Length: 315
Ligand code: HEC
Ligand SMILES: [Cu+2]
Image 1 (cartoon, protein in one colour):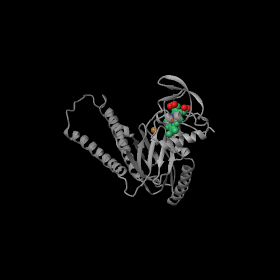
Image 2: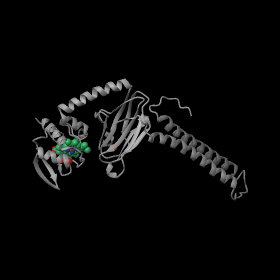
Image 3: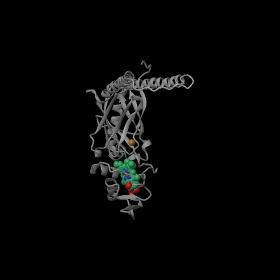
Image 4: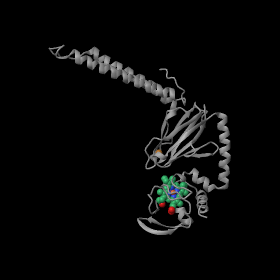
């Protein structure tokens, strides 16, 4: 089949070919079976065929309707398998960008340590194979870029599976939707972002600029950088807006009611309380909120940096 279009990735041709092949076979079956039914209704009506007769087996027919579907299924399998093998075999020279998913955010980590979040999206160079190891910190998500014909489950280690992966090579400059295709809870719909495909020189310029900014922010305000890179911002704002969790603004020193082991108690937010809230989120639940905060892997230094930043936001 000659589909005349400009494919967005190197997978489009084989995936679309399999799709159209199956679609065409289905249309042929639909037309053939419907036609035969109409033919039989007319030919064997009471008017045209007054004396009914019984047909008792027909070896020739049985062979035909076993052999033809088998050939069709083998065709579908052959083309499907070819496309599948291409998607599972990552080229050796692929550039690695690690993908982390959580409720309800994405994080993309570049070889030089640069991190991009859901708001920023995934930026890649065109005509370069990109290898994407997929990690989930909580439940099963699914990494889906419809324009590239790429969709792969992002499975948490806890499920016992090894980390999953996928790869692609973009062939068109532009921005394409990237979202979670596995319903993963309340704000599943927030896991939508873009893949930005740049020319190789534009990508290099973008990478240099972003990396410089990222390194500067990490040095100047590690707490702020961590809140972005660890995905806290998906549920906590820094400007007083109430999201899924309370805003970090004005938090430090505030008095509030929390539920601990089913009992309400009043606390004043200090370093020790913040440390517990971050390390064991399910211990004290702020009254009026759902226990939705996941435990996130953070080192003690990282927690201290975040606490420093939360304190700053209340000064
Ligand atoms: C999936 C959403 C989600 C993410 C991601 C998340 N939190 Fe939370 N967080 C909540 C919710 C909901 C609460 C309120 C319920 C509770 O206390 O557990 C909360 C409570 C807190 C509290 C206590 C606030 C208070 O008013 O006492 C702190 C501190 C906190 N989170 C820090 C963090 C940090 C730091 C991160 C990132 C490393 C983070 N959270 C990531 C949802 C989230
Ligand atoms: Cu998801």
